[in-house]
Image 1 (cartoon, helix red, strand yellow):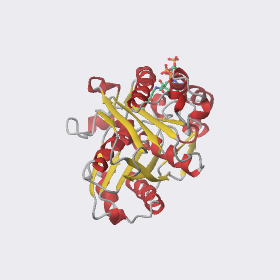
Image 2 (cartoon, helix red, strand yellow):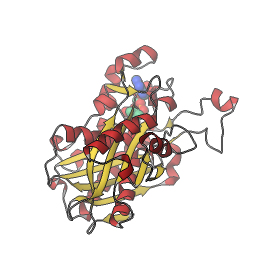
Image 3 (tube, helix red, strand yellow):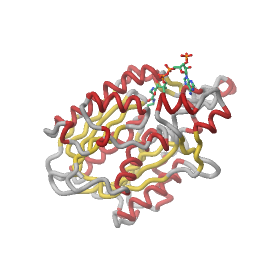
Image 4 (cartoon, protein in one colour):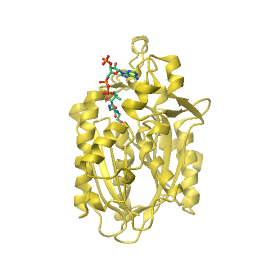
Length: 332
Ligand code: UT7
């Protein structure tokens, strides 16, 4: 689906983030599985990740990140008329995590739903939110990208366990000056490759039984090298497409915020696009792959570090289970 914005531009008004307290380093993982700090750092760029413990949950991280974003936007939870949580790790199968966050915040005037698009969830959510604002169907939207993958990662599988972390990033979206905000955004998917990254059991096809638990079917299964190749190609293609949609070139970009799944994927993609390292924003070393939370958390950190000036051109790009992928261009 192609979106090129002209009137009723939608933009990011404020950002917020929440991370679990517990920090798990590569050295901690060396203690529990056959891996090494050296391998993980060299093959992925990850040094540590945050993991939920005790009473931390996805919805609680969402609520914390949202409170920060709302305060910075000078809005109350009751000012929100649409609340979207992009996640693949809801607190419960039913109801949506968005409902739980709504209750915590008392965002009683909002319509709320979860959006499932793998690690591309935040950019899918941005594309959807933009439509509501463009069509005057919503004024203030709270979009949260949040995932707690640690409970669904198989801690006996070194191919996946070292990669993921937990976190939540929130943005408030609203109407902005014409010519700024979201300039272009595009979502893509290929359901024929669903088996590259999935959780076999726990859905209605294969509900929990003694056998599914015994066979570890409630954990993520991933074909890493296949996703690696796909990721490099689609990151380049989709970024170039959204730039072209708004008449821009990679050289005009101030920043690229890529999905933080593997630093080698990011390096291959940005170099192929002719970008310089200082244009690419990274925090993968500290958090690993937080799925839908990667981009909004990186956005929030960049805002906090005062990186963005008014008028800066920022591209965001992601890929994940589905397969899904997507990109967007913002004028800050
Ligand atoms: O958001 C989307 C989510 N998924 C992704 O983005 C995943 C994309 N793929 C990747 O990032 C990479 O494919 C991985 C990081 C998952 C794997 O890196 P790779 O360079 O593709 O390694 P590989 O799977 O080809 O494995 C190379 C070797 C194997 O050993 P042998 O067979 O050559 O002896 C693995 O068993 O590395 C071994 N290996 C490890 N060694 C130490 C795999 N995981 C580990 C580990 N520690 N954690």
